[in-house]
Image 1 (cartoon, rainbow, N blue to C red):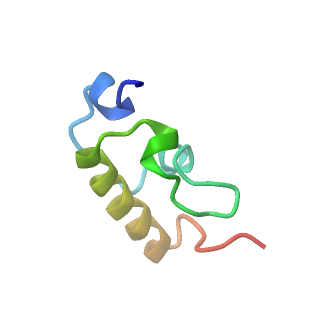
Image 2 (tube, rainbow, N blue to C red):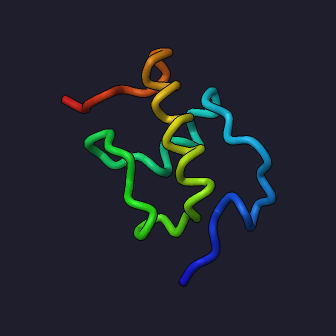
Length: 66
């Protein structure tokens, strides 16, 4: 099993304004990728999902792709 990206980088907060980092965890259809594929631990997956949802509401990330 692979190491969690956020645990290995010692990231304390997942910022919803850091769009480049959030795009790594969003598929080409703008869906949140399953943690089994990304290797993110449960704690950080919950924070990541909230950050992606906030970025979508603020208009930084799209809800869907055309």
